[in-house]
Amino acid sequence: MKKAKTDLKTYKAKRDFSKTPEPKTSKKSVALRHPVFVVQEHYASHKHFDFRLEIDGVLASWAVPKGISSDPQEKHLAIPTEDHPMDYATFEGIIPEGNYGAGTVMVWDIGHYENIKTQNGKLVPIPDCYKKGRIEIELFGKKLQGKYALIKTKSYGKDYWLIFKMLDSYAGKPIKNKTKSALSGRTMKEIASDS
Ligand code: MN
Image (cartoon, rainbow, N blue to C red; front, side, top):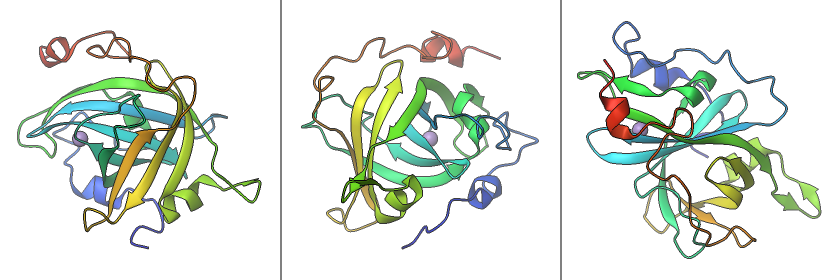
């Protein structure tokens, strides 16, 4: 496996914290009973969404160009990116020009998740699911609800994953407030006009 363990080295190496307001540490949330998930909308050089799951005290992360759908037929590409610190879950604002990932970030959705991946009737620990490339979780967000899967795939020739809705009573239901922050209720435009 390429990424056997989560860590923040790459995250820190890519950023100059004297120049960007992004968090450096993981002091929040590790003691919460329910692990955290967050989806951030990010208008960088390419507009995309970042899907992050708390695993082993950091936020394991994927860039999802098309965002998350509630339609089980829509399997979206999720490209693994560097682990982010826990405090990043509530980061919303502007990464200044000249910095890594420069652009506006919105907390598109935030909540907790439950690991539901079982094998032979037993729950598979989430770090093992991540290592094996087969994650099944139930999301309790403000927008995203119900069961989702993240599956590592070879069909694109690389270490890519697919994220998609699993069948349940939330499948196919429209996602509400798509254009507004789950944290502040602001639009991308409103966040971008911060100074
Ligand atoms: Mn991003």
